Amino acid sequence: MGYASTTHGLPRPRFQPGRQVQFRLANQVVRGTVTEYRGPLAVGGRHLYRVEVPFSGKYVQVYEIPEDELKPA
Amino acid sequence: MPSNSLLHWRQSQRSKLNEIMDAHRAVGGTGRGRRYATEQVNHAYAVLLSSQFQGFCRDLHSECVQHIVQRVPAPLQNVVRGEFVRDRKLDRGNPNPGNIGADFGRLGLPIWDKVRALDRRNDERKQRLEELKDWRNAIAHQDFDPAKLGGRTTLRLNDVNRWRRACDQLARAFDQVARGHLNGLVGSRPW
Image (tube, rainbow over all chains, first blue to last red; front, side):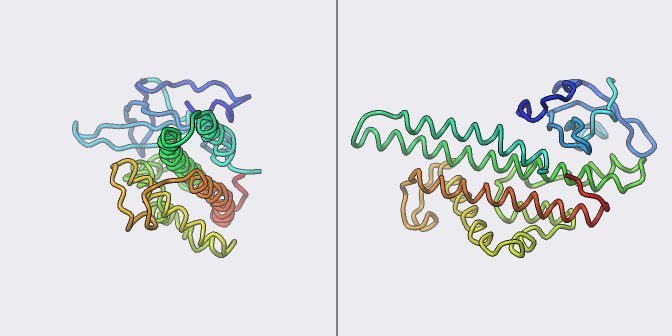
């Protein structure tokens, strides 16, 4: 997590790489794995995460999702 | 106020590059042995500079996406987030002008035209970025072809410092044109 010097004063990131999470994608809820903490790059300096979601067992799609839209899976 | 991406570039990423500069200064000895050692440090410095600048560009792209997505209806926001980072060149490739232009172009931002309009000297900085890319690839593949490296195969500290200054200036310019672009799209200053 290379953003330590610019996240001073923010709450610590809730999710570590490897953590299973879920989030809303259109009308469904999908599960994925946090692969990277991206830093305070969401609007308002919120924490942003890179999340990989497997579809159909093979294809993996990547998303960058703000922390407040993620829930532990 | 700069973007968080630019703040990070100025603070954390700069300190990592300074550590390599310190290593260069710390290399002792004289003659060929020292020249060999400092050249290896210069190689590491160039590769690190390229990777740090890639990190900045990728971060700024992510930050822009998050602001653009605010204008999308809530149920579709995460769908759009995924589409903007799908096969993003800066996730894997060098921060060369082509990759930077392609990724920001997907956001509707012709970034090289905009930074050129901001300051004509950005054309020269763009050329420096191409040189950095050529040297970074030569170092990574240990393939030093003088025809691709300005007619030589030795990298000097001054070369890397010149590229670093160009990256610094471009980082500031990218931040500025991205802010203007987002302001026009979203209707408020993102940073």
